[in-house]
Amino acid sequence: MIIKECKMPLKIEVLEALIRRLPPGYAKQSAIQEDIKKIRAGYNGEYRVFNLLKALPEKDYLLFHDLRLSSSPYPFQMDILILTPSFLLILEVKNMAGEIYFDNTFNQLIRTNPDGKTEAFDDPILQVSRQRRHLLDWLKTKRMNNLPVETLVISANSSTIIRASNKEINTKIIRKDRILLKIAELNNKYKEELLSRRAMKRISSLLLDGHTPFIPKPLETYRIPSTALQTGVFCFKCHAYSMERQRKWICRTCLDTSHDAHISALLDYLYLVKPSITNSEFRNFLQIRSPSSTKKLLASLKLKHSGHNRGRVYLLHSLIEG
Ligand SMILES: [Zn+2]
Image (cartoon, rainbow, N blue to C red; front, side, top):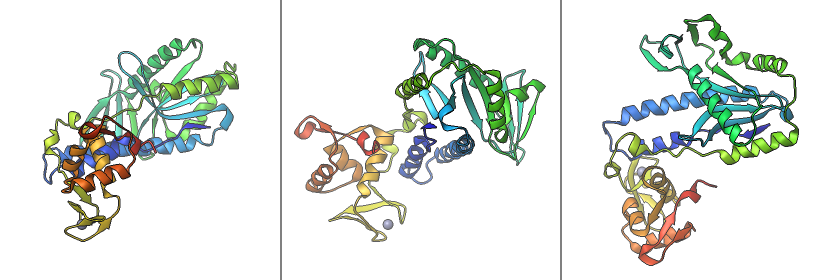
């Protein structure tokens, strides 16, 4: 049963907003594009693996995508977690094209691109065993000491060539098509049911309650000053900050119109600048001339707010909380 669905990471949307807000030709743009590509590939791999897991009997397998649990000193994140009556299984998914080589000696993963370029990454086996340790600690704080936690690294790309310095690695990393077989093996290893349905439900809600979503801070990450961001309301047709507020939004260049173009501008503000906005910040960021349309637009959004008059602060989180 899917407890936490496989959804596109917020970070992709945030970085795409950042790209749009940066002036054309801004130096860090290609690095950000490259990161978007990597995150997207990672997500595609997780999505493919998650889909295969949907074939598992619903009541015995609870599936969680992208769970991030708080633990000291830092939260830890797991690509996919499976909770069964007899064990837990953490999956670390890799979706890399070309050839990957597991180097045991230096604990690194070396990827050779189809174009021959090599790149080193942290060893995913080490990564997932660290997650295991954190999860065991976390379970201990919930007074669950006796649950076995298994780990696997999954290669989600069927065309990837996998090589390793050590043969035994093939028990720790598998291709995605072997995942159901591997889970059947684990079922044989852990025959005893340690958790009742009720206990599984309880752990499942503890896991969901413990989830702390990752809030990207892209300006900090890429060291971009907020003054570098273009202001105004974006026209998605001609790709410029050329929308003007009349009765509705109308593009000065292509004359395209929109009723709600201010919402995507506010989302940009939430993603890139901060989670709250004042009336004058709203006016400046969206480049609205008339104070009365600013007021009307803000009121129409029915955002939660605090403070009064000029000091009023509108909270933007409700824009993404559905
Ligand atoms: Zn336009």
